[in-house]
Image (tube, rainbow, N blue to C red; front, side, top):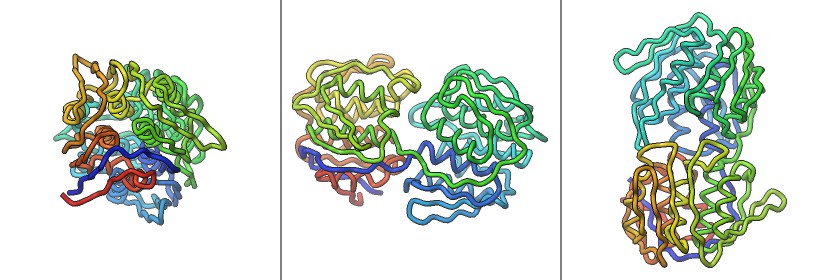
Length: 417
């Protein structure tokens, strides 16, 4: 098992390039089930979750080849309708194969994903939507078993905004008979990206990026060549890395418009952000100002940036309150930040963070993907040496982050524990 060793106190400077989006790549891969043939996906990040998705696809009958950041998926001969527990348990997004398999093969048997470190995240909204589209669904021995001769259009109103549910039912509806309307749909940029890929395949979709999406089913879809959008969470993490070290970092291959809520908060905290020729420059102030944050569904402040922003607030001037409104159990990084000497008190779904003059390096343990990033950020700003263990969480969502940070001047190395 690997760990990261960070000698903090280095001011970051230079250029860094953001990798392709993990949260867009996964559903894009799965959407290829709907269109038999050879698909070519560019700007795919090297991540554990990508490898897991490839394994799932291969068990279904797909043939997959990778060359650099380009992946070719041949979905011509997909004939297995079952995704087993040993794969689905390692990555919740695997459950998204249910709808596409049902649409293509008329049946699907997919393991329930179970809980995860940051909350239960049930799939009941996915299943209710498929049932509304005519699927016959049974839960047996930890598996979802679904059948439908052909899915049909339906009006589906999500009780809560769900990114996975919106992506799932959008894919399932692409070849359903008639029109499907998704109300209270998620609005994240990744939703728009998946809709664009489906449209390139020949699907008829309107309204992606708003809370009402209309899909008119077509009889068949065709293979695509597509380049994945930049990862907005990785981009945001580098922005905070520059801010927390008082750095001056230029970030390439990011879409500023995807991070409006984060940018407004960073500017309120005194961070300078400018954009020239599609290169975003982030300059950290001598002292960060404290700000309050409430996570919300997009376009609100992203829950996936909450842990990183909390790390920044630990060294801010003043007191900030951070409220987590999306997931339960998403403050597990707090106990590890306290090991750096941070001053944080949790009450319910809010954390009160009183900034300290300096963090002190410590051995810490990652508990989930974004918590991993927050501990690295704290380590960059801390005195002395920090060791971050259990970084297999980090490898799920950040491509070579230690190499990218080292390229900006950080003293960070990956070693075997």
